[in-house]
Image (cartoon, protein in one colour):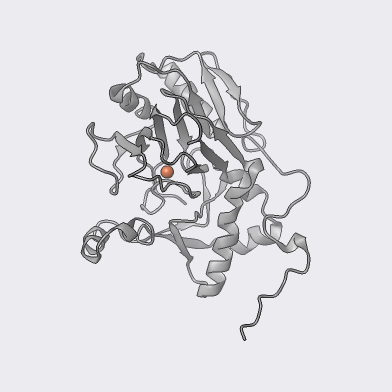
Length: 307
Ligand SMILES: [Fe+2]
């Protein structure tokens, strides 16, 4: 007869049980307050997610506006714009260029406009992004951000959620912080994207996309904040730990993205645009709209190796 797993000594031993306040810093303690002259910033929560009003993204983006957009993204981690009715692929590319170069996703269908991926979901092509993840974490230099535009949205549902992974780190116990200090984890696309491919296709793509390693806790390249950087679909193991311990630790760490206080949820309308800091947050596309249609266009922005 199998031995039942040992029951937790108390509910407080379960990784997601927590009563009372959380540490929720919008920016690193001591970081200067951002001031905006051109943006009207309307927060959706106190520390993650803000709607930006008063900006027409179909007009040329000057350097002053670009600087405030970069500042707002660092401060809020995900920023939203509504009613961008004249916004097309060229504007999309110009907006992404505020942060960097577009980066193609090797698993998406070939884009009509290079760099702009169209993601159309319906009763045939069912959404599979309903898992907490960071885009392209399986790359040596993961995307620093993504710019997503809603083209067609279901009458209800199809929201996206983002979780602040600096807050997830801040709220780990001191014991857990010291346990993961200095550890690295492997990230790999094969267990997820590879499940839709033949062995030959996997072997071919492996040549250019080997499994990579990133620190379990990375320093955000711009803010320097510590960010918990493991995610459920792409992080496969913690380097140097026995399998069982690696699995248990990864599971506990990846679960942190599910804590509501770290999250913001956005209800899309046609011509809404969202930009997220792909190192600071993870995201989850809620798959509650089947068989309705949902069409989005996305640009991922090339990033830098993490340390
Ligand atoms: Fe994604």
